Image 1 (cartoon, rainbow, N blue to C red):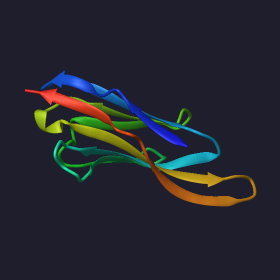
Image 2: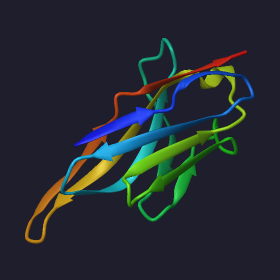
Image 3: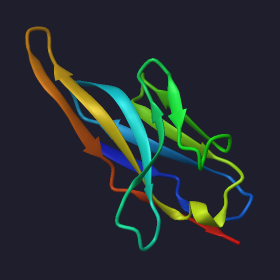
Length: 124
């Protein structure tokens, strides 16, 4: 199982970017998916957006109204559309997914997986 983010880059303040996070592998379904970010010089990751499998979304106050989380369950892809970007949004952005493994006869458990991160830089 693997999560791979893409879509990061350099953008001017006020601009937009759309991040993607694609899950690959077999034998799983994904429950809650999240976007986190880690600003430069900060060792702690900040939870910024969450989406359940049935589409309920929740946002951190710092991004609410500017960022939109969405997902395509048929393709196992998570998105983060970021508008009106600010220099303080500069960070490495990570996705995380809660993976459920089961087959017709056995439940193997649920485990969290992280992507490797994608860098977003917002210039002033």
